[in-house]
Amino acid sequence: MEIKSLQVAILPKPPISIFKLLGPSFILIGLGLGTGELILWPYLVANWGLGIIWGALLGITMQFFLNMEIERYALANGESVFVGFARLYKKIPIWFILSTVVAFSWPGFSAAAASVLKPFGLENTSYIAVGMLVLCGAILTLGPVLYKTLEGFQKTLVLLGIPIILFIVLKVVNLEAIFELSKGLVGVGDGYLFVPESIPLLSFLAAFAYSGAGGNLNLAQSFYIKEKGYGMGKYAGRITSLITGKQENVKLEGTTFEPNPEQVKTFYRWWKMINIEHFIVFWGLGLITILLLGLLSYTTVFGHPNNVEGINFIYNQALVITENIGPAFGMILLILTSVMLFSTQLSVIDACGRILTENLVIMLPNIRKKGNIIPKVYYSAIWMLILFGIIVLLMGTSEPQFLIVLGAVLNAFCMFIFSGILVKLNTKLLPKEIHPSFLRKVIIYITFAFFGAFSFLVIYNQFFGV
Image (tube, rainbow, N blue to C red; front, side, top):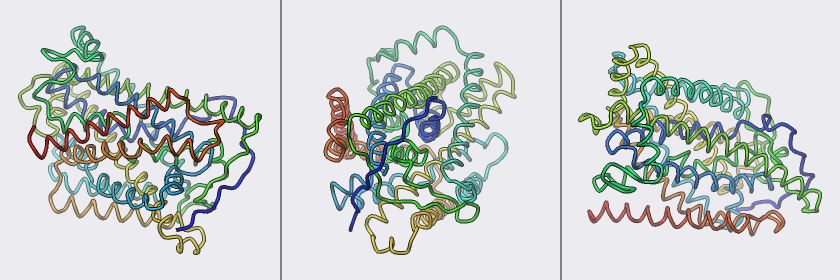
């Protein structure tokens, strides 16, 4: 395996307006919409109340700091963190390939998106889920510039979907629910503090890990800021469609800058702006979405006896909304939920395809002699993932909540692994002038310890029943 040294060039100046930077965080929040936001946290609230919502606040805050260290590396070196990790540990691409395939090849999001449509008389959800996977492949394959296709889709969905959810919540919410939410943010529940005894640790860890994107998907943020053109990503090139796009030279290795005072000053201007962008979009909109859907779940279906089975709580929500404010709003909630789950499946396939592509190209340097190989490997990877998902669905494995929870727990362990080496990446491979601050290092180490302890606790609980 041979990874070339970084080239050196001028760090471009950031745009004047932060609005020109908006985009990558919308993709990352889109990855989370169909997991923790729509399924896992509302499911937990429906069964155990709002006293556990502090976990969402803590989880998305931890992910914010993780994501920013991921962005720091790509901003400075114009390459993904996977290339950086491989510069530190030659065999680590094997881990990222295996962990990504095991955690994300399951079609849980398309299965959930199809299942939500059952009240419309669409009973054969496996075939609907298969159709959704094929549609995901078509969108990713036919969009001329892959990043622009994904950004436009997710930005539109988030900016339309959140106001609709807010409108529905305002129509049904009451003061009691708001009071319970305020208590839940500091861990005070109905008869318990922080975590009720009866809650499955597996589900709680899954929701915690999916308070945002989750697992290796967080690392995909380095692809998105690179292709958006943040910092040294300007020199990297973008994946374009083999059918409709104009080919660009997509480089595996990145380009860095000379850390002189002027360039370091430029870096910190970038750093300030991308922190604001990620805080507003990922942390702000992400947390608002989780809290709104938690409020909706608590107000409409908390304590309903039929919440425990699968995603039944979503059907129960729609019924209550139909009774309170009209059938149109119940239908809108179901359709919006299905579309958001579909968008998550779309983003998951893209992120996994990118992760598998770069790590395979790192592991198999000979294929790089064939020219601009990354787009070809990417499209091969996503269609293999889609084919596997279709086989799983047609074999009858379509219980969406189980597939999502399984993936989330695996990704909590993945976050434990990569958070442990993220600080080393940014201190060993970046100039000392742009190293993480002491406070950010402490937060990453705390995150590492938290996910490690929680992951091993869940594993121990599952095997020994403690």
